[in-house]
Image 1 (cartoon, rainbow, N blue to C red):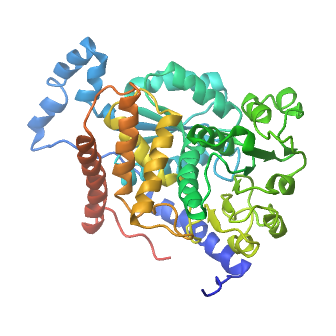
Image 2 (image 1 turned 90 degrees about the vertical axis):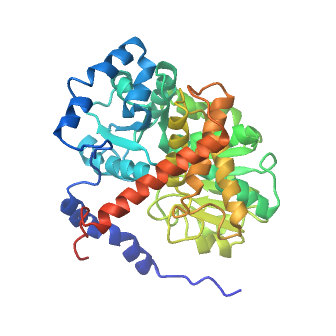
Image 3 (image 1 turned 90 degrees about the horizontal axis):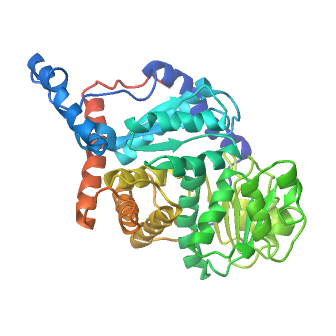
Length: 452
């Protein structure tokens, strides 16, 4: 097998920087990325008597008698809110709600194109968790689901937990549940290829933020042993002696893992956590150099490394491979095995909305991850291709069906459909969203972008 060609750092940085260079011009040209379009017929102005006054009063009265009828007589069944306070936007940090709006618009675009979900970006001018929870409760009557995005920890954990208790529609935090879903999917197939079991592997988790904390939750739910997980934050390995976590940071969610992970009581930093590990999952800060090449040599044979920091992973993939790691994934599309949230949330929301689910549980995420892994396995996996790719659009309705069936099984669905009905519905909605956009492009109603 030919040795993997190693691009220079300069070439990689230039490639990574290209989207950022053209993005301002493109955003200004289109004046944003999403818009509202009618979905009903307007054959003439007389139709407004049906869609607005006086005809609209009839469905209003029906909904007044039964609030659940709002899912039938309005588009609420397909509305999702993308809510952020702008306190932890991508790798930019606390840049504020206005500066976070382009990201939320982008999320809404992915929701529509990949999942057929009508998503609305809602950035809010408060950082107080109780205010955010009140806001979510206030907007609940308009939406079928809510996606929390780019909210700093630890309050993101509190907001997600409380919102799931207080609201009767799904509330999901993509930085937590979305990341965990795709990591689990990739790990299922990676472990198949290296001949190891999730219940037996030692897992080093580099970074103890929202992403890795929820990854640990979901991995444990899927069968990993908490004691086999060793988690590292900026101050070192988590263990029961790290009183700073609860006394200074007051991070109850990280403290939970400090207490139940690391059964061997390992202390130190990243290299100590990686020694003998079968899997390393990096969700920390951009590299390279966060994980040194020689540290990969400390891992077990046939190891797996997911290095997910963006835009540059914690180490270059070839550094891990040269040190003996068998399978490497990153968050980037220009390297093999992209561990990408966009594989998760569009299909999961599609399934939750199609059965009018009351919540999205971690069990539903596990079901979605299993279907993602199964889809990739059926079309063929190898060391450089362990998860579906975004262009494989059929994966989204399959994921939607898996999520919806789990909601039905767990008594969380307002409506119950068969597996075939769910597939036909999800596939039709997603196909319609994609074809509608392509039609608008062909007809010139979505203009061609400026020259790069």
